Image (tube, rainbow, N blue to C red):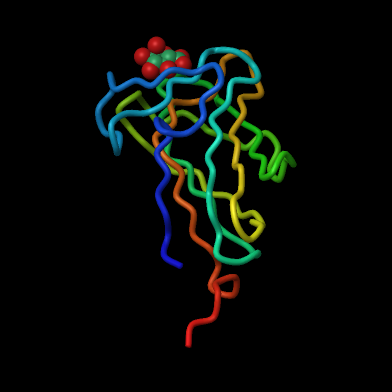
Length: 138
Ligand code: GCU
């Protein structure tokens, strides 16, 4: 399957707001995490088949400090305290990519802030299933 884009502003948001006050985002905006531990954005991503996938989070962090987040799939943390380092300013966007296993069907992929500063500004998640995880074509 081709890579699929999932906009943060249309995902499930807990302790965050949709914003558009810093340019360079895709879609109609981005999520501004509330500056608290535990704020999160949760995407529902459908996979054709079980297997590995890359999860690319597009974000901005205009502060001078890391904004780490736990990444969970289906309620299980698959990547703890993933670093979302500074990007120079709030209109400079970068991508942080991790690899994780997805289940066939729907997957709840959640990015949760692990410090009181909250998460970075989050634009979107791009999911690309590994070639060997794709359903065979014939
Ligand atoms: C600023 C910035 C926001 C950002 C916030 C933060 O207020 O304008 O976009 O989310 O800092 O520190 O999280």
